[in-house]
Image (cartoon, rainbow over all chains, first blue to last red; front, side):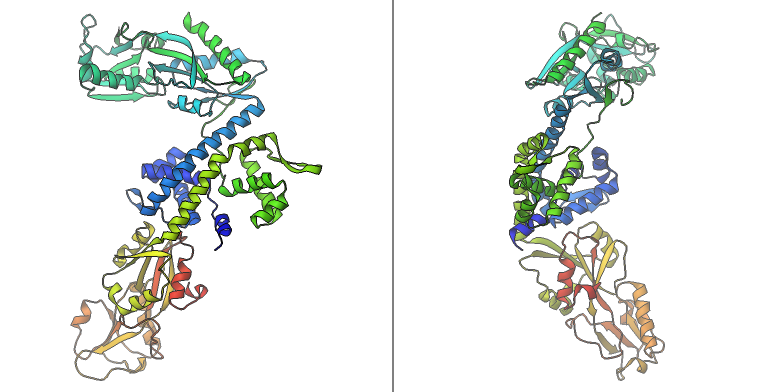
Length: 317
Length: 300
């Protein structure tokens, strides 16, 4: 078959390469379906279509999942570069679309401050001549921001987590140290003679990276570095409030970044708490607005600035 | 989020995707931008102007923006958005070229083709003769797996085996069956006596040695009876060694090459290949049929 004809026959759906790459990593059709927002049969069909297009058997399917064939391994190594380029291209297309429409995408994480600020944004921008959309971002928000998937992010983070040279930050709120809280009926910790390593024998209940980026990683690192051990068990929750409720039920000891109890003011509980590491970790927990360091779009800078001003006032009071 | 804000705030999701974008869209769009017209791009890509235009329109739908506009004297020009897209296509196009080259290399090196069958099947002259007539070399690197008939479907659907060969294979869900030809019999009588010359001679003790699907064996027995045989039964391979004196035993001839005709009037087992539906090797069925000297349309 002439070269040209051969080339035209192969018409790979580029999304199928992303599905294939994910499946090669997860080895599980359902897991890949969940991650790619597809059903398990749709993943299976996508892979079959890709195999048909390239006329190669890429995967063996077993009850326990999928395994790459030798041809699948060879194909994956070549497909990786396309996947990276395709993801980059998609980001560029979306970014260009937003620029042409004068639209700004604002990503909001799951932290307590972000949720409060999100509510006040409606009032802040009501009737103003700005075009923007708000959406949820996960703990990978700094990567999404650098890749141009969002233009502005409102998020909280712990220590250096999330910051790269490609991102600029305007902090709206700083907090020191961490908060430890427990139910006295279940744990006999003494607030006056509190010894942090004692809590490592319990289950730690902490907000996840969506609610406080970097906090879980910090704890893990800190325990290993300072005490040479890890907590018996750590459970991550979608919010500080959920983690605190679990602690109130005696399921473990709550740990939160900065002054968590101040944010949990509305929650009814019988927890005792202590603030600790305030001097070792000054300004450790910060809530801010973020955009790309090389951002030139006036609309983006304008909205980031407005958000910064809107957030600084209520939270600094 | 969407709908919470009254004025200018709407929601978005990072999951929103440019779904359906394919290599074809990028190639056609790039060629149109370079050539400045659908017609010239069609000539360049050896396809029709209508096809080129349709692919470009599909691409515009995927990116949700106009990419090209007609400009009287100057022909077809990219819109500012299209120009921006075109400028960013470089790394993706380059990586796709490399992938295509890689796939071509894998094809050139010969793709792995895994044949499965029950133990012993591969040693028989029936299979070795057939394999010799398959034009595998150059296109495929073949390997042979021992797979019992009960595991054949699972093995094919799991893609741990590409083609399963056997006799008396029935239709199976999600698998395609390619009939390669009827095979002859190895007829023997336990003890003394003459061998039958036609089905009508069978009026005493006789049996068929089972192969493949039990339903197919029963159907074959019925065909013998319709051809004039009386009585008879199907026995499994182990039981065939313990049949009574005087019994005529019909066992599938695994030694003789395919194409050795059964004497007129003797029904026989089909030598078949099973493969999963929509197998990626597009020319596999054609190749299997060609090996049996059949046209694909006759084979399945």
